[in-house]
Length: 117
Image 1 (cartoon, rainbow, N blue to C red):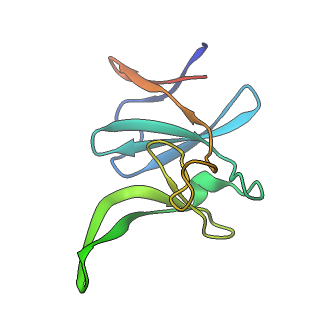
Image 2 (cartoon, rainbow, N blue to C red; image 1 turned 90 degrees about the vertical axis):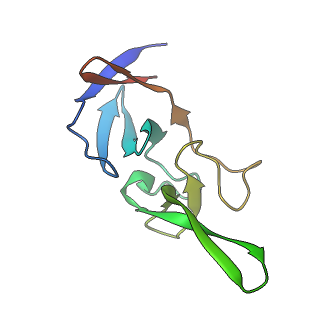
């Protein structure tokens, strides 16, 4: 597995993202509340630049008439057709067992954010 430094710690603000090119692949690096994640910047539906989509959360319902907004900033919505993906895993929010986008491990080494491809 190859490691690539993609940013300095602090370069990507919390809740922000950076799109990088690694070995001909466009990859989005996201800074979540508890660390960094990286996804291939191509929606599996029709190849849209997925990582340019909106980040939102999930609405859950423990009982009729009761709703909670959870996982703020962890659901990525494709800018073309609004397909949604869990930014932590790359799995589709609607069909997680069959549809997903490639995710890459990310580590922080001192002052560098590193993607493992």
